[in-house]
View 1 (cartoon, one colour):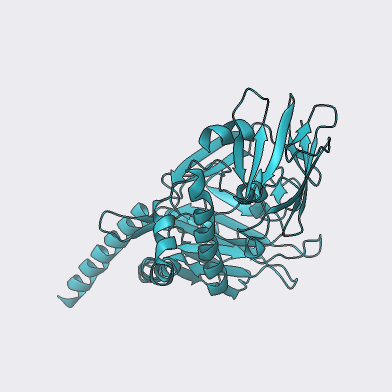
View 2 (cartoon, rainbow, N blue to C red; view 1 turned 90 degrees about the vertical axis):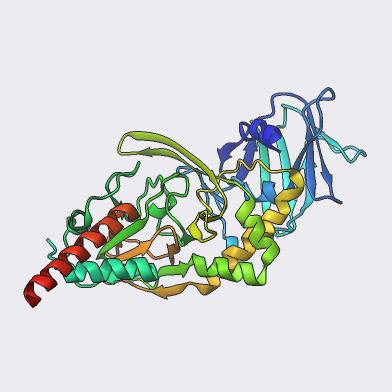
Length: 388
């Protein structure tokens, strides 16, 4: 699928309510209903290219499924059918043959899916004592999440926390970033739409270990609720309840990517890793999961595609059903382990009178553990001195 997919991806173009392809020459397209493939042949001298229906449906580029500016899929995975089929394939020339021809004059393939989706494929100053810092960081290390309450409503809080521990981790989004609805959003996090549970920056080999999200202004609408899931627990459930699927998510390499720009910095980040990653001792090391940041590139044997989708769907739905929901208040600093905890939010109404404004930043676990050791040593020294 790798070579075929690479050439196929170059054909995708963005257009309202459509998947767009640029076919520059005569081709043939047909359904292989038995195996759930769509077969394309660019000309009679080339081999047939087979594309699994589930992969094509997952990579629909219509506005309901894909956010063009951030180049990220946004369809609702809770309702995604991995057994989706192309029920009807119409091309520009209707013939009695099961293979219908397409040429550059009409430049269209129309696909009606079994999930009732329709695709038109077009050819073309916060003070924290030592004891409180230790308590916070220990909670983070043990439970994966901790909330600091009643922090000042100041933009510098995240940076001050980072400096209290060591220093913030810089990424392509800077050392600090603002999460709010933007009309020119280049990342799906900067929309007011629902954001399914995910881990941040899975496309980094050394992705941030801990997230800091300081609520400055909270939406007064019914939405804007935080979602948190312990993904290590979900992995445990997969291992116990769906062992075969667990092994698939453990062994199948997935391409995670982020292509775009931020503050005049252009980037193209890619990292290949399974959804579930273990260390050398068999313990969970990190979870990689973000539907918007999962690349369309999927270099696996064609017969392994559907089993992976089925396994991934079980993981996603278990996580969504297990998510806790709560709403942070202005002054709350939500911190959590980005290697372990999935986070998201419900959609909310964004108007001039009703906004949601979050300041974010990252810390690495190397820095956190270093600070913990230093503080514990210092605290022990002070305690021993006072006892004497």
